[in-house]
Structure formats: C-alpha cells, structure tokens
Length: 344
Image (cartoon, rainbow, N blue to C red; front, side, top):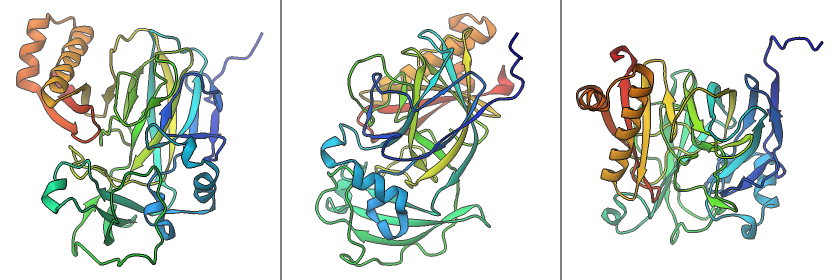
C-alpha cells in the first residue's frame, strides 16, 4: 500500500521562454508543472515593463525572455504569465485556493507608467511618464529614483527603451511608500477556447489587481477546465485602490504559493480571504455594474457561510460591507466588497 503523503511536495518553476507566455490565457497550453492539492510551488514572475528601464529592471534571464518571444508572438494582452500549473484533483465546479506564503522581488526595482489609458491622461496634455522606484528592505518601503517622459504613445507590447535616450530626472523627494507585494494578474484558464486577453479580469481571475492579494492571503478561483491551469504574472511592489495612472509599481517578483482544491465551495468569481476580511469581486463595463456584482457575490458568500436569508444578508452588506474601487483602467472595471470576519 502506498504511504500517506504527510508533507507537501515543493515544486519550482523558473521563468524562461519555455515556462511563460506573453499576453494570454489559453486552456490548450500544456502545463509546465503538475501537482496535487496541498503542494507548494515556487514560481518566478517577470514584469512586462522591464524594458522601460532595462539597466535597472533586467537581468540575463529577463533579457532572454524578451529576446526569445518575438513581438508577433505577444498578445492580445500585455502581461508575461508563468505557468500553467495543473492541479490533479481540480475539475469544473471545484474551487482552487491559491495561498500566498511568500513574495520577494527578483530585482529591487519597479516601474510605474502614467499611461494613455490612465484616469487623468488628459490632465497632462496626453504626455506619458515612466517613474522608477527602488525597494528599501530595511524600512519596508519603496522610494522614487527618477522619472522621464515617454516618447510618443505607449502602445507596444514590451518595448525596450535605450537608457541613454532620454533625460532621467529625480522626483518626489521625501516620500515613504509602504511595500505591499502582490500578483496583479493570476488565475485559472478560462473555459473559452483560444487565446484570451490578460488585460480584462473575469470569473477565472486574470487582471484583478487587488492589492490585498499579498503574503498570508488566499484567493479562491472557480475552476473552469480540468486541472485548473493556474498562471501568475503582472506582479506589483505596491498599488493603490483604483490604479489611477494605469499601472502599479510593476516588478519581477518570485512567489511561494500553496494550492488546495475545495469541492464544497460554490463561488462564481474570485474570492479573497485575508487574516481579517472576506473580499468578493465584481467586474463590469462601468463601476455601478461592477459594484452590483461584488455586492451580489458577498450576499452569496454570506448566505453560503451562515445560511442567512438574502434579504438579511443584503442588510448586513449595507451596514458592514465596504465597497471599494479595485481598478479603473483595465477596460472591464473592477470593484471589491470587504467584510470584516468579526462580523460573522
């Protein structure tokens, strides 16, 4: 008889041209790692904006990915995604829990883009800006290094800018921005066949951009296809709710993630659990629709956990559920509803 598995197996996925794709989810992609529920994966993610300041944001591995994946192979989205991970027990109707055990920057720098799709682009005469930040582990903060004006329109997937081509000016003296590492884009493969854009979020996850998806938290994804096929990328050093300029501080970050398959949960879209809160997500063409969907998912969660009536859960939502803007800039808008666990 086989011995019972008492310790989780730890797997490793190094970032490489063979273990990443650029800009899409695709349920026909062959998994690069196959695991069981409870196993742990060390996963390297690479930022799609390393070319904004390659002298700060690239190393030989990242350069190899940029050189190996041609512009024609990139898209329709922009993010470099590592994976997929196949979880043996996961089937449609199940839920995969993705628990973040650790996140560490590969390189102690990140970049923010004030983009043409940002909230206030017209306020700056449609000029786009690149701002590079440096991680300070001693203070647990990130500090600005320099900024430069981006030439033209930022509409290329993975551009590479000559470091000597533009003036880099110091900016934002005496600010102290707390680090909050998280995956901006992660999730399971969509049920839809073919390449699915990484930019808009959906029920499978994707570009959710929730800054609370950090160390110690768990995101629950409803499984769409056999094995789930989890991928991660678009990692952030930190971000504010809204992601107003169009991006967070984009960075290459290594994660340690544990996966669990749940057959007794019934979530229709990603649900985030932190040490203090349950957080549901809603997506839509505008913020009102997204807020409605986040609220509906919280009502569903409350009714599932405590057998509340829907009308009672709605009342509780109004007095204890805080609805926030997750992001305004991914085409499909995102809202999230936060409920303190102490309430229930």
